Image 1 (spheres, rainbow, N blue to C red):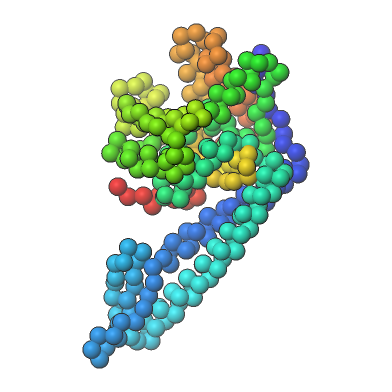
Image 2 (image 1 turned 45 degrees about the vertical axis):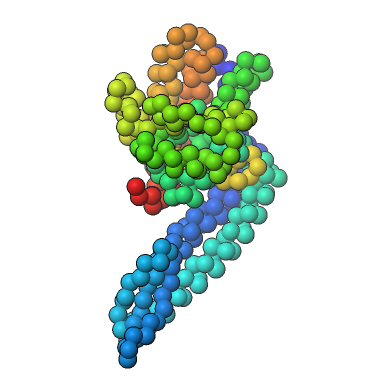
Length: 312
């Protein structure tokens, strides 16, 4: 019998989750709108002529043409769009902060704070689309969509199993080894105590023992067929809420692929009845039950939520 089950969150927490996700997604949309009007426009006089110049955030300049009714309209439209976009973002930032405060008060979230902080930092750096959570922590995404919490039966061993879920995160990336320094910089911004080791991937551990395992998709060529296709598996993307109320978007694999992956891992464990093998099996069983009970459905990936502005 599985040591894991699921339980619906309270009606109050469910309502707060719905409200906060609406605000969060509007906030992300507003940020994208602001990105479209980054930089500025100004009139530059040269001799007897005056030109409209567009500036970018890296100080590059583009001359759009001499002053005319057309360029004046371009300038007016841009400045109006920028003012509206920035005003909306400022309002939504305040609303998001309040929503996150209520998330904490209503106990709407249960994801470890450091996991959400890490996912949020990937978003802020424009890298979120390059990372897929493939380990045990995917259950937080499934639970968020289903409105449930994964629970343990009252055994010391079961409690230890979920502690292992909360103490690590496993991520695949399509970034290459040369990008490890960028990943390390991001982790340092989340927690300065992270230390690193590099093998086929990147492993970081902080002072509290939380481990981040980043494996590059390009390093899977020597692995089994099931491992090689992990990066191309159907995605499941949804906002998640931390225990402290903060929010981020988690991109992981679909529940059906998670079930297959966990069962495959359980079968490969040297002692299938050991803690590692049983945890993988129990997690696959509880996600399967969520699907069977129709509290969880597959989602199409929404990369627009994540953004993919990173360029190597």
